[in-house]
Structures are given as structure tokens and as C-alpha cells.
Length: 310
Image 1 (cartoon, one colour):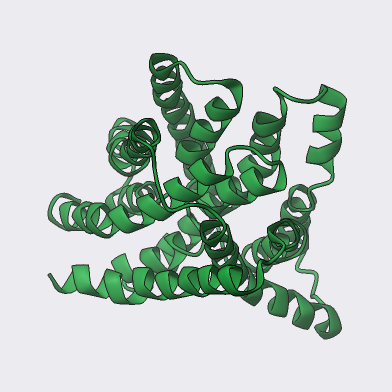
Image 2 (image 1 turned 120 degrees about the horizontal axis):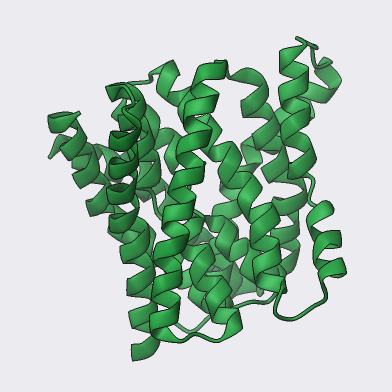
């Protein structure tokens, strides 16, 4: 029970307050949500990725294990969500929105503090979570952009959009600078730190603004879709992760960190993509909001299970 309340107080309540502030601001001032999403995509998200990769020690062996897990995990999730999409017979725009709601999970502002809570501040598990966050940042900015645009524009424009995303350049640059031990000059390091610190708050405010701009009413078919997304993300996700780490024969600490990383709710990236490219914005916001609320119980159950079995 103490774990449940700790997760509730340290992860969910602060996030809920930030989302609520976004809702209030939107209702009071009708903010421009596309401007907020651009700030996240082109400033705050690249900054936090650079900052964490540059400052976190990660061994080559851990990188190999985590990357292999991530590829298998994403392939497995893709198969599951594609089966659901075929069963539901979605339109193209809804297909991409459903994929994004399952494949993109909140590995940053939910996953990092959750990792440190579950593993008592372990540097080893933090390194694993940073790798997951890195790959989860790349996927929305490449496949995610392609997914929400492929059905409504030509491929040249899609690739132009993908190549304009700064995060795909920031990640290899951070690894190179860290690998060659290149110091970051203080006049540059300080603004990077400011931008990185702004990511979580701005992203949550953006979610709140989107929630504040929509009607809080979910039709019966939409309710089924949101519930299906939540099931695939919060229940099927960690179950699939457990199967993969068992088949890979990973050590208990690495396995547990990867399972916990897979149990988090839908990423804010799915909302930012939906807003930036005008693709099923209400569904995207509802999946993030609902999955975050339900994760109070599902994440607690995953941590409880791992403390017994792992």
C-alpha cells in the first residue's frame, strides 16, 4: 500500500496538477496549441535528450541488450496493435492514432521518476531507462511523423518533415561528444539545462490545453477505442516485456528495469504529433489522459509483481 501512495503522490498527482493548469489556461485564454507543440518538438524535447545522454554513463553491453529488447518489444507491440486495427476496421487517420497510442509510451516524465522510485535511485537502471527514452524519442520523430502523414501527403514531404526534426541529430551528437569526452562550454551548457528543465512542464501543459479545448464527452465507439488502447499499452505491454526478457535470459535487475519501463502510459508525443499534424487530436488526448489515470493501478501491480518474482 505504501508503494501505491508513493507512486500516486510523487508521479501522478504532480502530473495531474500540471495538466489541470493547462486546462484552466485554455478555458481562460484559448491558447495556440500548435505553438506549444512546436516548442516541444523543436526546443524542449531535443534539449532533454541531449542533456541526459551526455550526462549518463552507459556501457556498450547494456546498450546492446536494451536495443535488442526494444526492437523485439516494438515488433511484438506492432503485431498486437495491427491485429486490433484490423479487427476494428479503422479509417487511415484512426489507424495511425491507435498505433501511436500503443507504440509511444511515456518513458521520460513518467518513466524516469518511476524507475528511480522502483529501484531506489539505482544508476544502472537509470542508464537503461535513458536508453529506452532515447529510442522512444526517435520513434515518434521518425515513424510517428510518417504514420500520421502517410495517408494524406506525398512521401517527399513526409521525409522532409522527418529530416527537419532536430532530435534525430541531437542523439548521435550527444553520444559523440560524450564518447570523445568533449566538454560543453558553460555558455552553451546553461541554456541546454534551462530548455531540458522546461520539457516536462511544457509537455504536460500542452496536454492540458488540448484537453481543455475539447468536449469532455466520449461516444460509445470512442470509449471502446480508448479502452482498447489502454489495454494494449498498460496490460499487454508489460506482459509482452516479461516474455521477451525471459526468452533473452537477462539478469534480474536489467529484466525488471525493462519490464517497468514498458508499463508506463501513452506518451505525450502521441498528442503532440496529433496536434502538430491535425490527426485525431481528441482520441490522442483521451488515450493519454485515461491511460495515465489507469496506470496508477497497473504500474503499482507491475512493481508489486516484480518485487516478488524478480
